[in-house]
Amino acid sequence: MARFVAVLEELGYRAVQTVLNSGNAVFTASGRDPAKHAAQIATAIDREFQVTTPVIVKSASEFLSIVSETPSTPTEGQQSRFLVVLSMDAARIAELEGLRSLVQTSERLWITPRAAYIAFAGGILESPTGKSLLGPKWQHLTTRNWGTIRKLAALCGDNAS
Image (tube, rainbow, N blue to C red; front, side):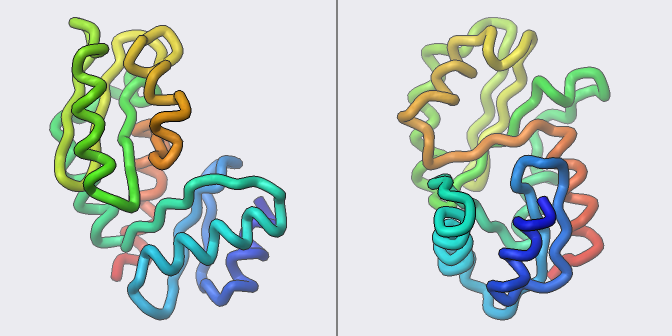
């Protein structure tokens, strides 16, 4: 993660903080164009790490709204089974309606204009919904479990703007 932080700093981002070893970062940037930041970061990741991956950038206020608008708050023991699905494009979130036919009776799927939320009774890999979500059709999205979302939210709260 140290090299990832350095890459973000080389791009001009300040106060870079990361969560876990999965490429989650919170930073301060000049300019308020999330799409431009996402493209710039994706290009740098590809160049530096030879990894092509979707990069999702949200302002602190938008991210905190996504967190506060959750339709359900998982218990401590269920945080790893509660996913938040994010995209740079709201229309892509709406496309998740196509997953409804896969949702098991023990699962819940909520789709809002900014994010989708999925509660799994078991693990994501045990669910047809989860397996589909991890497939190539949805590669333009990213998912984070509620524990990670809460950690990122705490950092955003420190840098909200």
